[in-house]
Length: 408
Image 1 (cartoon, helix red, strand yellow):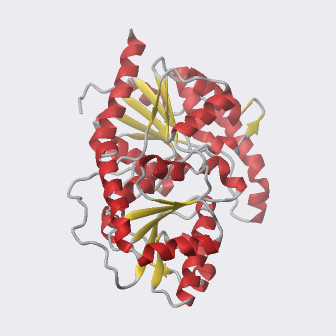
Image 2 (cartoon, rainbow, N blue to C red; image 1 turned 120 degrees about the horizontal axis):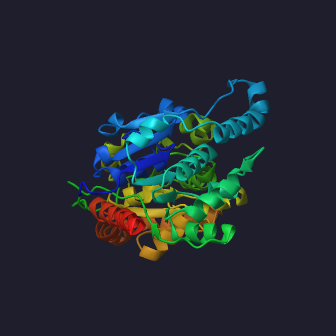
Image 3 (cartoon, one colour; image 1 turned 90 degrees about the horizontal axis):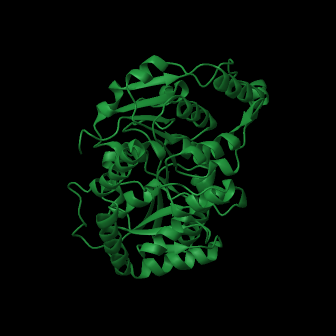
C-alpha cells in the first residue's frame, strides 16, 4: 500500500490484536497492510487492560480513561453501575481531551471511529470537534438500537446522530445496518462502504480430500457464544443429541474460550457436546477442515433482533476459507442467513424447531458429498470478493478518496 494513505487516528475499544475476537480481529485484518506509522490507536484504558495491540501497532497508541469513579465488583457495584456510568460519561464529555498535544503532533488527516460502547462514541465526537479533518464512522452491529445512555447534558443516541450527520463517510458491516441507521436518524451518508472481515488466503486452498461417507459426522462451531448466539447453538446441540440417542454417529464440537464453555457447561454436558478448547486464530483453519459442517448461530429471541438483523459475523468469511460447508442457523431476518443466501454458499436453517433441525442434519449425513458444492462455492466467493488484499485495497481507496475530496 502507498505511504500516502491518510494519517488515521483510530478511536475504538477493539484493540488491533492478534488475540482479539470479533470486531478486534476484523479491524486487525482490515489494517494489517496499512503503514503502521500512519495509524495512531486511541483506546480506552479498560480495553487496553483486556487486549494489548500486536506488533507493529503496539508502538503507536494512546489511551484515555473511560472510568473516573471507583468500580466495585460486588452486588452493590452492580446496583450503582447505571449511575456511575452516567457520571463517567458526563465527565468524559466535560473534561478536556487527554493526550491532546500528542494527538495533534501526529497531525491526523482522518479520524476513523469504530465505537463498540458509548465511551468511544463520545470521545470520537469530541475529536471530530477538535480536529479539522474528515471523519469516518464504522459500525459493526446495531448496539445503539437498545443502548441509550443518558447523562445530564446528552445521550449516546444524540451523540450518535450528530456524529453520523457530521461524518464524511460511513462504514458498516452490512447493507441492512446502513439502512437501519439511516432510517432511525433520518440521515443519508455522504459516502458509504459495506466492509466485511477480510481473509488471508496465503497457503490456503480447497482440501483435496473429499468428506468421507463413513465415520462420525462432525459439526463445528468456532468463536464466542454470547446471548446473540446461544439459543441457536442450543437448538442444534439438542438436535444432535437426539440424533445420537437414536444411534446416529454425530458430534457437535465447540472451539471457544473456556469462559463460554463454563457458562453453559451443565447444558453442554447434558447434550454430550465435545469441547475442542480455544484455538488460536492462525491455527483455526486446520481444525475447521476436520469438520463436515461449520455452524453459524444467530439468536431467534426478539430481544436480540437488533443485533441479528444487522451484523454479519466475522466467522463467516473465516469459515468460507476452510473448504467445508456452512450451516447458518437463525431467523429469516438474520444478516448471516441473508449473506449465505445472497452468495448461495451454504445451508440455511430458519427454524428453531428441534425436529426440523434434526431432519436437515440427517439429510446432510446421508449424503455428505452434496456438501462439496457448497464448500467449493464458498471458497470461490471468498477468493473473489473477500480476500484480504482485495478488501483492504478497496477500503484504502475509499479512505484516500475521502481525504482528497475533503481537501479540495
